[in-house]
Each structure stands twice: as C-alpha cells, then as structure tokens.
Image (tube, rainbow, N blue to C red; front, top):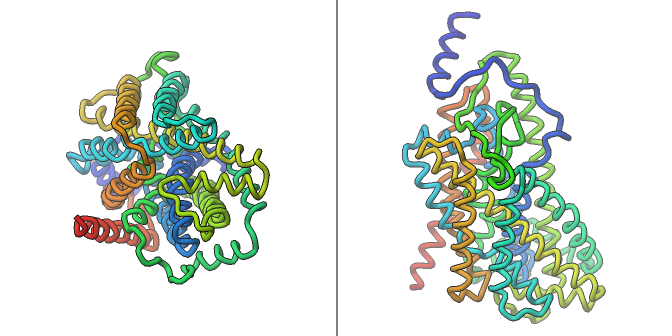
Length: 474
C-alpha cells in the first residue's frame, strides 16, 4: 500500500470517528433485500396516498396530480441519501447527526413527537370503520385501535419482522382490491383527465387551481411518501435488514417475550480500496433498484389509482364533503356503480390500511425518539425506552381524542405541515453529514445533489409562503 493511501485512510477514519473493519460484505441479491421500502410505502399509503391527495382531487380534480408525483420522486432521492449513510457507516443516521450537530438529538425528539402525536391517521381509520359498522362516536373506536396497536408492537418477538410482515399483508391484499374497483368504475374521460393532470392541465386551470389551501398542498407534498422525520426511519430498517456494513446488527425485540439485547449504536466502516468500493457499488445498485420498484414505482401507481378513484366517484357530482367525508362518498358511489359488497370491502381495507400505517408510524416515531434519548444518555438497551415511548404516544393520542376533536382531516393537515418543516431541516442536515463524513468516492453525484437542493428549496419556499399567508389571515 502506498504512503498516500495510508494517509488518506487515516484522514477519513479520524473524520468519521467510527471503527473500521477489513471489508464491506458482499452485496445481497435483490430478492433478499426487499423489505424496508415496503415499510416506507406503508407509511405513505395512510397519509398522502389514501387521504390528502384524494381529498385534494375530490375538490380540485386531477390537474394537481403532477405535484404528487414530483413529491414522491423527490422523496425517493432524499431516502437514498439516508440509506447511503447507513449502508457505509453501519449505524443509524441519528448517530451521525449527533456527532456533527451537538444538539441534534433534542431537535429530533421534539420535532418527531410534536409532528406525530396528532392521531389523524388512526382517527380517519376509526371514522371509516365506525361508519361501516354503525358506531356514532368514532373517537372511542380510535382509542381502542391505538391500544390494539400498542399490544401488537409489544408482543412481536422481532419488531422489524412484525412491522414488515403486517405491511406486506395489507399492501399485497388491499392495493389490488382498490385497483380492481377503480378499473371497474373509471371511464375513458377519467383516464384522459389523469393523463392531462400529469402535465398540470386541470379543468379551468394550469398546475394549481385558484383558491387552493397552500398549507394543505404543502402537507400533501410532505406526505407523498413517508413524510417528515419518518424518512429518516429508513435508516433503522435497512440497519436491521443487514444492508452493507450493518450485517449482523441487532434490532429491538419485545420486552415481554424476549430478553432485551444490547444494541450497539456506533457502527463500523470499511477500508478504502478497490474491492470494497466494488462491493459498495453492488449494494448501491441493488438498494436503489429495491427502493425504485417498491417505493417510487408502486407508490406512484398507488397515488394515481386512488386519485383516479376519487375523481371518478366524487369530483364533479355536486358533492362538497368536508374532511374525510369524501371517502364515504366514494364508498356510496362504489355501492351504486359496482356492488354493495365491494363498497364494504373498500371501506374495510381503507380502514385496515390506515390502521397499518398508524402502527408503522408509532413504531418509527418511537424508534427515533428512543434512539435519540439513548444517544443523549449513552444507553445501549433501547427496548425499555422504546416501549415507554410507544405507550406514552398512545396515551397522548387518547387524550387528543378525548379533548373533543371531531374532524380527522384537521389532525392530518396539522401534522403534515409540521412534518414539511422537519423535512426541510433534515434534508439539509443529511446533505451536510454525508458531505463531511463519507469517503469522497461514495458520496452522491452532482446530478443527485441538484435534486436534493431542489427538494430543500421547494419545501423551504412553500413552507415560508404558506405560513406567511396563514398568519396574514389572522
């Protein structure tokens, strides 16, 4: 080895402040790494895909659907930069943030809790299920659902496998049912409207309709995927899946069924040589393909299908529903145009998919908060802290239900706007972290940097403009 190589490796290792190992593990084939993106897709299904974008389409038509596809595409690139860090470093991105930004753990604890304690997703699920079975007060159904989620998370032997398995079942069963119903109901004119909407041509407007609530649009953009700090949770899931330098990582397990295991927060990286760079490139190709197929392509198609269904069943029929009433109107249109059985099936699976999203949200947010607490307190036993946070959030959600909130869409939009602000912050932080702590040879290419910068600008400008307009009306 040349002296310059030794100096370079020393410089990088000092910069990254992590242990080094001899080599990067060999890349696994695509079939063995599918999983983390399913969880992230499930997070997106219950917020943007099933609620906010169909809600906007029911009011303004399909001329705005282009923005949803831009939103999920931007999130694809944001997510991959998060995965890049953990793939190389063998640790969650929050450990890196804490090294570079002294007070980062406090910010992530605060911004995650404030953005997600609003139980908007499970409130929507509870409202739909309550309408289906004839229960008047959906809040109590929401409370029971939150407690059930806590029980499921507490009893799962391997937390990652519990969440991944739950989302796989819901997506594999639920999405095809919604696609089938949409294909039966949608007419040729609806597909034409969808095609025009992809290039921003609406009915009487281009790109954005007059009077659209920018705060709702901002929230929908943030929820064109996971949204907010939940994008960062992808770091946990690829760590527990064993991507790259995370091979052999130990995950959180049930404190009831299993003995809590020590979880190493600090990762390890590889020595800089051609063999390891070749292995990194193999991993990078495969995880990009996994995220492209599962998150971007499947997510984009799902957004278009549910938006098309909302357009075909609600828009232009003189229905002016507030909140999530548009979903109930969709169900009524399905009952009339197809069969009552499919209307029931639609409501049931929408409710279940939203339930699954809330379960994953609760898992992801509790992981984020628990790990950042562990970083501050230098703990390695995350399980106790994790489950404490899970049940604390459940109790908080129950208190929100009992406080008298009646409209779930208000909770969803409130959380979405806060998450848009969180996204603006973590996009910049991730870029700076990767630039300063990863080998130059594995850093992002220029064209990806441009896309990341564009994402930060879009969220920053929309956030400032939306908040300005909101305060101007007060």
